[in-house]
Amino acid sequence: MLSKKLEKALNEQVRIEAESSQVYLSMASWAEGKGLEGIAQFMYNQSDEERLHMLKLVKYINERGGHAQVSALNAPKTDFETFQKMFHELLEHEVFVSKSINDLVHVTLEEKDYATHNFLQWYVAEQIEEEALARTILDKINLIGNDKGGLYLFDRDIQQITANSVAITPK
Ligand code: FEO
Image (cartoon, rainbow, N blue to C red):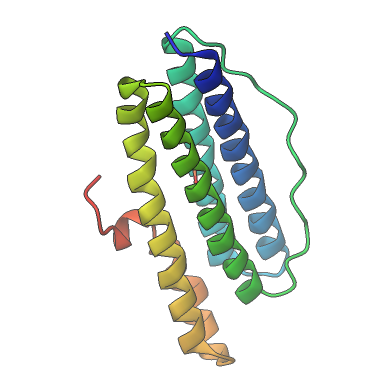
């Protein structure tokens, strides 16, 4: 059985993962509108992944006798100016999510809930991969600079890039 404090903290993470899904959906839509098909597909995939992160938490909370709550979400922004800035925001967002996961892990230790501590290790590893992925993409963007041919190839190739392809920890 989850403690009330931990249930509340897990539900907060449900909201953060749901908002992450919306943020990346908004990025996908913006990129699609700019004709950046590969980047759009990448962001649609990211959005789907975040929804799965949310669902995994929802099921865990309910399985442990809590009540997973579906709450109102903050609306993401709709204009990202340039794709370079957008990918910087993706990294910043993942750093923010990593911090919230760390805070959540801290609560499991305070509450001495080692099952939830164990459950959250999947998220800890996932965040390492997601941050690494965002940094890898930013490195590629820096290499391209303003080269139009480079952007064309980047947009084509990014569809193949997933968190697993730059994994530095085993799944
Ligand atoms: Fe579910 Fe990208 O954090």
